[in-house]
Amino acid sequence: MPNMKGRHFLIKAGSKLEDYYIGHACIMKNEEADKLLKPKYKNGKNYQEITKPIFEEVADKPDLLKKMYTDMHLWLPYDILLKADKMTMANSLELRVPFLDREVFKVSEQIPLKYIIHNYVTKYAFRVAANRTIPEEWSKRKKLGFLVPFKDWIREDKWYEKVKEMFEKDFVEEFFNKDELMHLLNEHKSGAWNNGRKIYTIYAFLIWYEIYFIKNEVPAKPAYV
Image 1 (cartoon, helix red, strand yellow):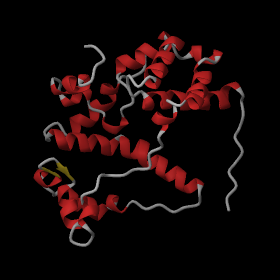
Image 2: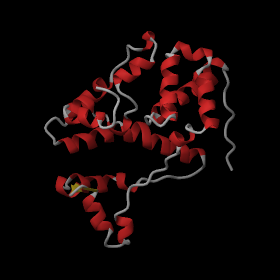
Image 3: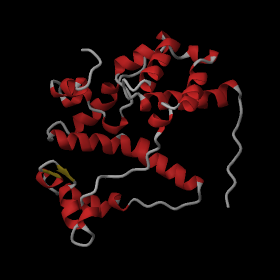
């Protein structure tokens, strides 16, 4: 299919959940990664191999619960909680996640699906309960994370050039097809497609690799106050 709006919706609508879903942990499809990587690095696991044992544990459950279960075993421990823990400890802050309390989780397991999503309203039971004590505009508001507008920054010339400079370095050819990297970056800058998360992931890896393997530097320890 051409790279058009609605493409992913059509693919998902015609596929089994187990064939495409990896939730918030998804960066890019297997074929996209293969297009960017040099042949030497195309032999890793595809994401269906990673999610398969997780889906097998909830094979008899509805798709909604399968999605939640996958996020709980991939995105939570290996992404969002990991980052939250590192960022707070790096700034001498103590973080708590009250909705992951064991007793709260036991209650949430008993909530019927119709109260999880109701008439396209997510977290329905939680919002109704919250509305008893907080204003309606808060109980109905959209979820708000701690997002950094990287996708917008790299459409600005200053930051586009910074990423471009990294993508064009000699050592990058060890891992990636440079022409494909630049296509990804230029497609994003033109506004033709949102490749922000893909670009950020590759860019972060290259910064890490350059520091530890090219320059062989050990970053200074943060000064705690």
